[in-house]
Image 1 (cartoon, rainbow, N blue to C red):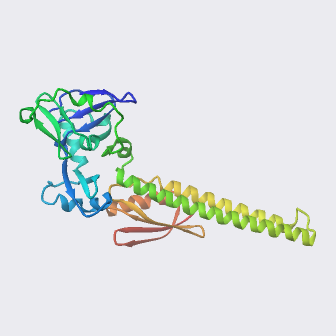
Image 2 (image 1 turned 90 degrees about the horizontal axis):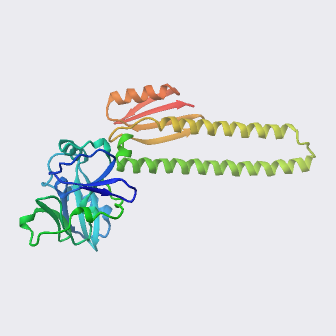
Image 3 (image 1 turned 180 degrees about the horizontal axis):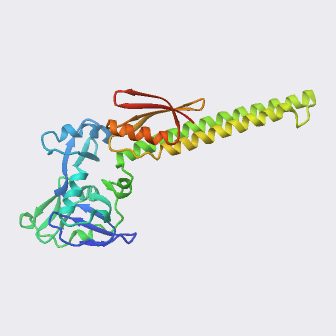
Length: 313
């Protein structure tokens, strides 16, 4: 079943009995059949602490897979935890005949109906209801009252930001968690460059003041050797900064796979030191070939799983 969102993009509610054809870009909301949900009471007020405990919360319940977790705080010290395996979900969607390349984002009905008391038809034979805050799907014959309304009528508003899959992030080879780590790294690098630029500007102003004092004290003309020397120094600094920005931009184009990340970027005297966690020797060779196309490699080393390279800009 589908209907238009505020951005005129179809939204489908997906059960394991879904049999309709999807032929345009859409977002989908998954029934509880595609993930695991638990409600817990813990002596903490922070969702991120509960997420750290999520694997033990589901210990002995989940099958083999690459699971991630979402945590929603519903009351003080009360949380609902979702466990899901995106790769397995995509495989199940393909088995239902769904072209997953048309899916922009995937949501869970749990996150979209959080804290709502509902009783809705999900298809011809099943309904979804809230049981103590957890959304479950049950045969209609087990419900006390057959719901008249369907899931089409509940998602009229814009969906939340609690998606568990985004096509845009998948296309560049990263998941949402990794994208946040990369964004944090880029922000950190930007901050370092900003501080460096502020220092250069401070030095520039100090030199300019010294220049004015020298000109007044010694009655130097504006074309003096000292002024030209300072101009040359500033040009050298600007050139160095441009090389560093180009180098960071090039290194950022190397596509990291799952569980691969940069853990060190250092710059000193026209040399850039890189440390990257890679999955295999094959990936190390690929990274070496990538950086050697742009830079002269001065030194290479290994520290456990970290591949370290020092290059000249």
